[in-house]
Image (cartoon, rainbow, N blue to C red; front, top):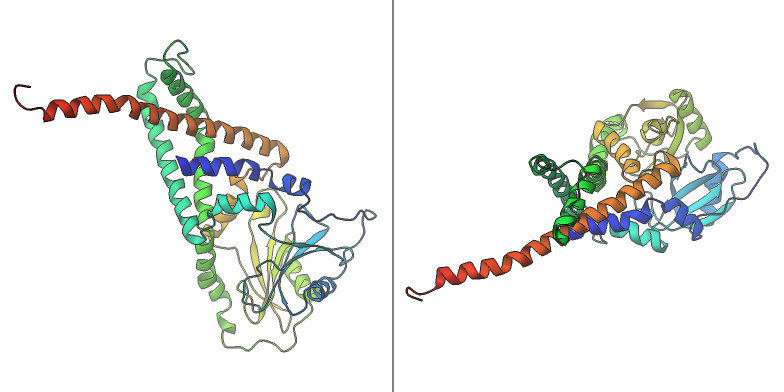
Length: 361
């Protein structure tokens, strides 16, 4: 219960992480230019990112569908190392560096890490995932118990003239049964999200390894084709889909011989479902393109659903109200458990006294 309260309390501001980061000044300010200003070539953006971080190599470019005029560049000391804090936000219309983006910075970054792994890395994620499974089990058991408990009461009954414990019990049951569908969805999606690292490793060792197998022993090209040419090839193959991420040759999400361009549709649902297109970095030809496995698709759908990031601000407000309701359910459940233990303690003590008393006492 304590860990679930932690997740709900930290999750509440995270629902509005975009809005809060913008208000607190942790998001790049995008200059106002004339509408319809064209984007500069991606090769120019890549060069600007590398020039801003001398001594580092460009690993990927990320295109946020909600921030179409900017691109996030991730860099590292080598192609295989994690980008760490080397993230740069650039204007797609001018290639101007807008900000050095540091994931985890500020109060929202602190709350996000506390919410996802309690600063314990993968063990923390897996532990919180286990708490999510226990939460789902508690919800299901609550549904089973709710029917027999409410046989003698009308739905929504709160016995206000009874003791404080009874009133809180009725409120606990009413709010709990009213929000159970949402709580079950958020609990299960949160559990799926804790498995993200393991799922991505499965994909890298499975489908990605299969797609790049013919190039396993082929050396990296000395000269790479233009990034814009590779992107054009991917766009042609993907039809109406648009790019979300391009990983450079040699990184963990491609191979030594490929640009991996991850494409997606533009609807609120399909925008989360990525399809990688592998572009030969030496020739610029597409070598493979296929949908990602079901478990990766489930992960991509779970991430925005967990924070209500599908329907704009109205859905976020609904998510926040339901989160507050769940906090009330958890807090009242903890209160009822403590009160019951306190009231049961004298009876348990008396019972033990009787059973240990000497004959004749």
